[in-house]
Amino acid sequence: MPEISDNHKELLKLVQAKMPFGKYKNRFLIDLPEYYVVWYKNKGWPAGKLGKQLQLVYEIKLNGLEDLIRKLR
Image 1 (spheres, rainbow, N blue to C red):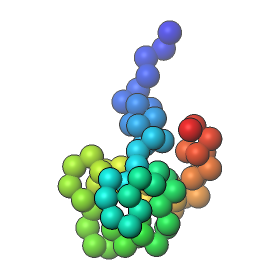
Image 2: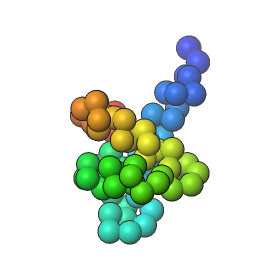
Image 3: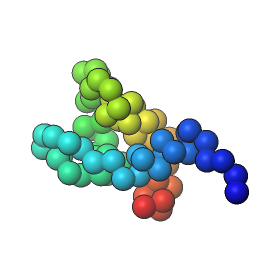
């Protein structure tokens, strides 16, 4: 069986990741409104894993790939 790459593992974690606080608490990160993710980009990403995941969500939304992520759910 082939080894799952680290990138693939992070993508699978992102599929299930939810916002831990605020107005959109418990919403899947991929389902956050685009304006909210852009706001974080302009304001500054949170520290740690959440910040990295939000950066990835930003890139996914920027490239119109949200549906691919939702299908992995």
